[in-house]
Structures are given as C-alpha cells and as structure tokens.
Length: 199
Image (tube, rainbow, N blue to C red):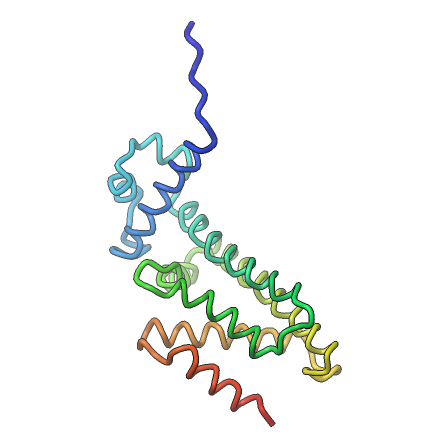
C-alpha cells in the first residue's frame, strides 16, 4: 500500500483561510440567512468534502469569522490592560474604537455581526455563542474600569460591571451609527464622549 501523503499545517491553514474568506464574501453579498453551504462551497471553488472537513455547518463558519474579529479586539484590550501607567478611559476607548474601525468597511466583520445578531434571536445556540463572546469583551472593560478606580479616575464605590457595560455600549453605539449612517467619525464621537464625561 502506498502511504498517504502528509498535508502540511501551512496547507491546512491556507485551505481553512480560503473557506472562511469565501464564507465572508457570501455573507456580505447575500446575508447570513440566505447564504447556504452550497454557496460557500461554490465561492471557495472546493469540493463538498473539503469544505465540510473544516466546517460542518454554517454556524461553524460564522463562529470562525466572529472568533477572528473578537480575537482581534481581545488583543487590543489585553494590550490596554498591560499599559503602565493605565491610559485614561476615554483614551482606552479611542484605542478600542480604532480597532473597531478596521472592521466596519465593506469587508468588515461588523457588517456580518449585525446579521448574526438578528439570527441569534431565533437560534439559541448562536445566541449563546454571541453572548459568550460579548461577555468576554465586557470582562476586559471591567478590568479597565478597576484599573481606573485604582488611579482615582472612577469613583471607588462605582460598580465596575455597570461602568464596563456603559463603556461597551459606547463602542456598539458608535459602530452601529457608522454602519447605518456613515457617521460620526471617530474623532467627533470621542469629542462628544469627552464632553459628556468631563465635569
């Protein structure tokens, strides 16, 4: 018997990337709900077996796209948590929004995120996935708030979880406005946030 040739990790990673990129294009073009696995297979130019080997379902594809976007946000937030001295919260928010801005373009994951939110209203598995990802981001913001309490920027008796929820809402509020209306730009938005938070 002839030995089965080994496939390199690089080849596997490239194939996976090919499929995820094809799915992203399909979701952006047709919407998450209307895109089928057959659409993704055709877009990727691969066999049915090749695609299903990596992603058994459409939900697995959306998870992979979300993991990339959330993972990037996690890297940015981890970096903010390591900064010494801690950045003021509005500056930290600016860094977070700068990353979000990279995900709002025509190929950005946030255009897909809005579709996923709608689908999550009727798919409990997807809803649990989305909630878990956003809980993780909120925990990052909570850690930033605790650091801000240590510097005196946030009152010691403030509830860090509540403040973190407010900060996270500022991020979502901005990118929804940008995606739906094209404005405000980041600088304008941050100027408004500073005006609200400055006594």
